[in-house]
Length: 132
Length: 173
Image (tube, rainbow over all chains, first blue to last red; front, side):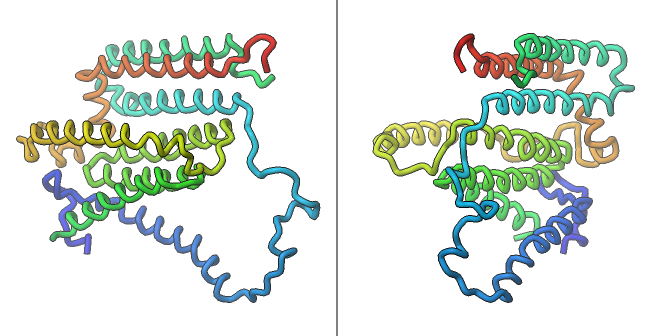
């Protein structure tokens, strides 16, 4: 159905034709995930009793809730990860267009990296990267 | 109805429906998982707007990094399944007022928007021949220099904010 549509056209009529393999992979991946579950429901014998349905924790009686409070340090690490992830995203188009941007582009990216370097040194100095 | 209209209709309905799923789940972890599906749909919408790079970033940053942050916040705060508590139910008049104001605002804004504006210099053909990321790079680091540098400041604020909030005070665990 898609193949007969022009891939290049007006903005409202654009169809990303190059991404059909991605959609096929997504579809197959979903199928691989769902098929064993569905097959399991259809094929397996179902004879439940309370002991069989109880949560299993290495043969011992389960202790406590499965969810518990995590240390706040995980949050700081995740936050720093997001920030530097975004920084790398900005580096990417800059690197691709580098030869068109020249020295001006180099200097502005150095300013950008310097700003985040200040944050990095701040986090380091405050001990946010140390675990204990 | 043509094929791309059908696809857009699916995406619009799916994104709205998934947003509703996210905010109505009792289990916060389920809400985050629905949000993952929501982000993937938004990425597909970007693909249909010929914004390949934005679609990739949507997956990498939002589905990859922001959702991890959400999960950490849930685990950090030890959020249990949200109950229908009286203190949440009492807030509904405020919710109605805020929704009414936002709807009015979006109606005013959307009336001003030209649905079929004159086409700019970056046609789809041009972007495809130059390369999506190359086009972004050439525009972002020249014409939109100031927002780009402001982004570094915002990221700096995010680092400092996270460190200050989570800093262990002396003598307090």
